[in-house]
Image (tube, rainbow, N blue to C red):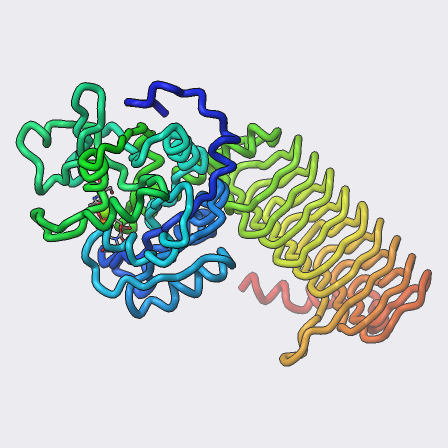
Length: 464
Ligand code: UD1
Ligand code: MG
């Protein structure tokens, strides 16, 4: 990020950090271009609503107080805001009269006072906490207004930053701009920071005598100047300030967020063989020397500990993978899968709400649900825990060092003791004591010569 007008760059972060900060998040957008029953800011990128990303960023940037501005009849947005940020205060902007009007919906919060006020947009989910902190530092250095600009080849539609003699003089909205001002490529990102002690004085002086008849937050620059206060501009990368208005921009934001998450995973010591084919959720945690092969998807709540390998085409959510475990290819780990170190989960294996002990192997074509399995147990191909009776879920307990023969059905609730064997093809309906063998299948009968006699009877006819 580049600084346009701030000369003293050495403001200590602690100086900004000790200042009380109020974040006002505008989430009253109509979002009609999304063509969705869902409000725009509740659409998700990397498994979290855009509003959730913005609330996380302002909180990380040090905002103790958060005000979320929602439109009328937007209980769903209010509920999501309350869920994401317990302390968030919700304000309703009953009429959409412009960005400054929206900020003033939080008048009660502004009147309570703050050193720094940051204004964020709920539909601009890629903003980094560090950028909000830079805006706050400008306030700590004495600016009354700090705005965020970006350079773009496509300035149409954006407000332009008018710089005169190295000083930010005004922000001109496209519809109100002169020919010369429209040629400016330094655009307004929209988000900004205001010094708390001047915020209300500035906001209350903003009028609506412009092309749209709206109260523009951007006019705070000019108003601050008129009051003899200083306004500065910082420059951010275009990607970071991208707003989302339609599904295509949503996909663009998703791609940018995935690129960030992949980069963070690799910087943290994980190998992604083909990073562009691996998809993360915002909270995915990978340890060191984890290897993720191509085409793997991480849903919410996954932790992979050091040295584990996730083979191709696996889908994980709500799971912990212990150190050195080998998962997949084609594995599905569902919520509550808790795998200890060195567990091996092979192809076409699904694990849900189950704990597996150290070194246990479930290598092929198996469903393990609502189970506890001890260490060093081998679960053979095609084993199924029959955990559901159509109404209730039941638990399967398998001890340590046990051996479950292939194609066994374990009808829960059932317990199989330590070191027990289950013969292949067994339907286990009762508990198996430790070190016992359970077999439940009909005895084999061999009929000598039967096959040859069968062939001799039918083979000549086939030739006709
Ligand atoms: C705004 C800026 C413009 C900037 C652009 C960047 C103003 C006046 N203009 O323009 O300089 O280049 O963002 O994308 O601020 N909102 C409300 N209530 C309202 C109006 C808006 O909550 O009454 C919210 C919207 O939901 C949105 C944000 O404020 O999240 C920006 O509003 P929008 O109408 O998109 O402003 P732009 O015209 O894009
Ligand atoms: Mg906009």
